[in-house]
Image (cartoon, rainbow, N blue to C red; front, side, top):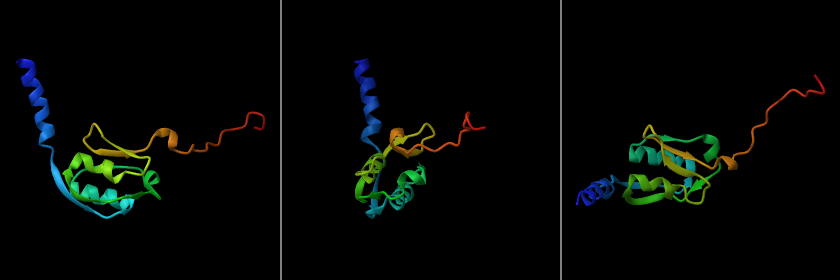
Length: 110
């Protein structure tokens, strides 16, 4: 009985996830993410380089705040995750980022 009660307590917050009505136009991903942050009243963290040139399908419906980023990111290599600070971080897999050139001294040509 005790285990069942603990399980029910864990399920209650998910059932009452905060919902919002979103009205975010399809198009530029940066604009869509900024609109999401305003409409959901959340802190969003992303690198401009990661979203540049990408587009979003937009979002025009009511749903839990936590589900919206995944829908806005459809068709992109990016994913959303909750940071320890509570902010939502938008990032892609590290392997998809181009390597950054580093000027290293050539040992044969000092």
